[in-house]
Image (cartoon, rainbow, N blue to C red; front, side):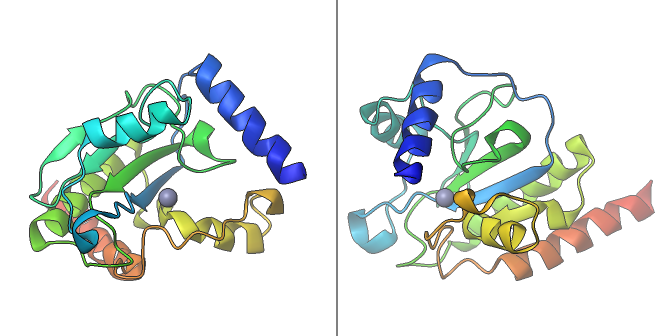
Length: 182
Ligand SMILES: [Zn+2]
């Protein structure tokens, strides 16, 4: 019941008002969980916008979509709160990967584009690599007492083929390299 209330309120606020995103503490990575083409569909911002509007939202909940061909599409304006991770929308950016990563891995181009986007955003907002989390990793924040347990998720997002630890390690290297150049 409590969950129902929370998700109702979430939808309510989402559909009424898009608050501005004032601080960025986290970047969350998601999978589109697109059921088409055995997880290899090149899901677009237009596709996801259609799904989210059908839920009664104003527009797409994510700020960026990284396509399987490496294209980065802009979704919701990054100056506005997203709708992608309950409890932390007010302080996070949401990136969605096209396809379904419980069914298929990222393409090499998609993975490279994700890393590049993460590097750009981490620099812009002054974030370390460990501010980048997969959606399901909210549960580690819950376990650490940094997020209320009502926000724990049972989702597998961003999918079993996305190794967030490896992504963070490579991102940390990218951020370090550039530091040396400066
Ligand atoms: Zn997600």
